Image (tube, rainbow, N blue to C red; front, side):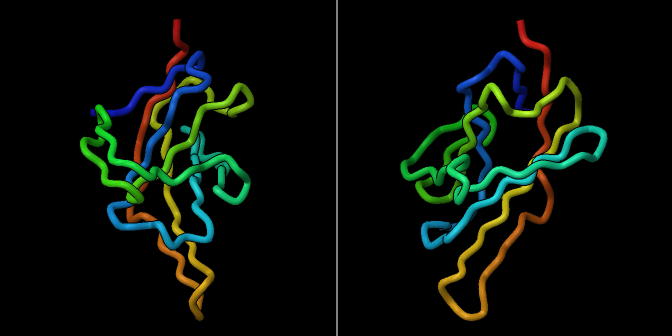
Amino acid sequence: MVQTVSLTDEGSIIRVAGDFDMSSNTDLILTFTDPDGVTFTKTKGGGEVTLGTSLVVDPVLGSLAANTYVEYIIESTSPFAVGYPWAVLLTYVNTTPTPDVRISGESPAVFQVCAGG
């Protein structure tokens, strides 16, 4: 099942699973890629991405434990345009240990953006 996002969905959540405990992060980065290959990022450090801190059942991703997923709330200024496939890649960053730990997903999650109604 592919998540569908509507351009009229301001305030809706895009949720991305990390499949491991990310509570020790120093930053979380979502890199979005549009159908033409243009990218933009949203970060925890920028106040745009949050770590999910409670159990949630997502209609597409299923049951997600606390600290294993991130959320991005669609803003009116989000540069989404109608198209498929959009992709989003999660990167976990922890700069507390030396050397820094940086883990990116092996493959991006794919979703569709529609015009809404």
